[in-house]
Image 1 (cartoon, rainbow, N blue to C red):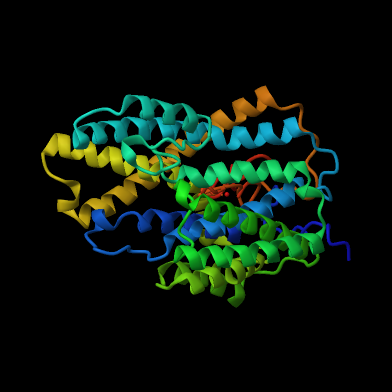
Image 2: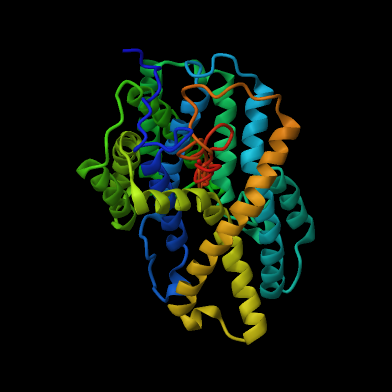
Length: 414
């Protein structure tokens, strides 16, 4: 069979437009894992509630590669201009990226000025200028080594955009075997980096820039390979394999481990879970829940850190006590509120801003190809339906055309 043939449409597996319901659910759960990973102080625990939530970014990068390939691989869309592709990606990733950076700028500068007693204006505004354009800042504000000073999750969205450049430059024309060879090489380098770093938790700082680079290079190429392989087979109805894949993803984030288990999960387990998820389906309430979580995953991923900082600062200012003193109730209330805010952000900011920029930046879109996924890394990417992360990433990390991101995906997602 032709390895470039897209997954056959199964009404129970994909909504109109070809949305991958199981991948939607997985993307949403991965975004929640990142959120809980950062919330130990609000939940009153001394250790991370989700021990390895940082691995969700690796999962987002694989999702992003899968979704981008399903929408833009040369076998799906032979003619694709740099302008149309990059305009679609920027329209998908940048609006919320900029909004979260500005929120983080207000929260971080207020908190840092209070903590340090001064405003490190030159370095802070230098970082803001670069970060607002989705570029890392290698200047250390307040002596802190952080490429994206105002929103820690932003680093993965930068890598999502960077690998998109590699994709349009030639990666999209590679067939399955060359992609597998590339992914295998990156897997070896990623494992070596994990051993040296002690884990795969890297990419945010200049010191771990190489770790972030290898995380996205392996994840994205592996995701592309998974798509080209999965396209050979029809989708299947949901069953034990789908349930086991979703449960396995959750357990992977909760289980503690070391660089060895990090590498095994990122290199072997996550690609397999994406393959199973791409071939599976959801029905009824699970499909609606998965779709909703997938829709808001990019907002959950990018808004969580600046929201935590802003809420903590505002709470201390208003009440005179630290929000952590009210754990775990403050943590539960924050999660519920963030989910609601993320939905509103997706519905009334992400979608309108994305659609506006795409109308302004791209040429008239051709009729959807058979490979297009529905609605759209990432912390990080594209949506399960049509595009972060993504992308998402990102984060930040599944979505349709131009809407992928690690946890970043239009109606689907880096």
